[in-house]
Length: 227
Image (cartoon, rainbow, N blue to C red):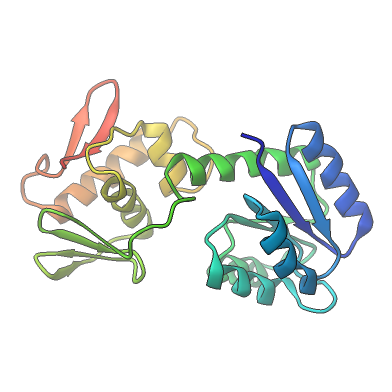
């Protein structure tokens, strides 16, 4: 599949640099120079991922991101010269999937684009998701990021929530440790078996006294949620 990337940045040099590297890697690219142009580009180009600057004329990137999130859950990567932690946290809280600071290595940007697309489209993120998903006596409210067991909320960490979300969106499907890590931690997989095992162990304990009731281990393959 030829993925489409929309670049929104008021610096022509940045747009041309990203376009060069992305097109060389097989992506279709469209670029705009202001925040006010993004809505029209989203409608006509229908990108699979958006690279978004914060400081742009017309409408800044944070407001553009809010507009995008009202209509779509397409991956958005902020690329900005604002490097303060508060700016990064704001962007991520508003709905960005990644945050890259300028100046950047264009090869890293391409790698992160691929990683975001792999995580998003490998797990059905491009499909419309139901607000509530049930599996036995478990109900997942994806709008409120809330898991209920027999109607009672289960207190989860963000990683535990992402793991159960992945499982409940695809009950019965086997997920490898790499797939679980990239989805729950939101970064490329490295040898982190212990992190995954600890997180799943804690999640199992919160779900039931019987650790194997919901989440099954398939040795040498991965894990799945009992459908």
